[in-house]
Length: 113
Length: 113
Image (cartoon, rainbow over all chains, first blue to last red; front, side, top):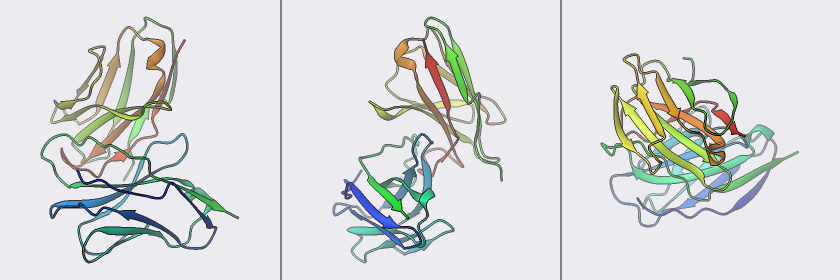
């Protein structure tokens, strides 16, 4: 799986957009970009994934650069409940084997009043 | 759709006892994965079940076992509990095996005394 680099922490004011960057310069053609988050003491939560086109769902938007070497997760109107550690992961969508999930160190997003 | 449910949510056991945890996946999801999460080790993959078959297993001793039923519900069992087994046990479901989009339940917090 391609390696990813994320800033260790970010702050965001409530109501503002939170833009979380991820670098994945060694991504290969069949690898998707996935984002998960984990709120303290809760299980991880799948947010969104994409291959090369920008994606949007009810939780967030994912912007992937044209060369696919980096991406940005956007939470359009951050709330206090979005305070969590956000993980960017790059890997093939269907490995044909186990669905083993592994996290790096992620970005700790703190949303403040 | 209802999310992934896990029972019980909290459990206190003593060393040497055994425990069985239950997981009901999202309706229509056929893959169930189990994870152990501790502050020191982070998220660690235990095993995945698909179509009542174990697809892959993480690096855990044989005291950890699981099974899946024909309705995709899954159970995991830990025998001869040790203090180090105290953790949050998470179940995640996915439509098919090998898919990286996994939906987690709230977890069962097991305390071994």
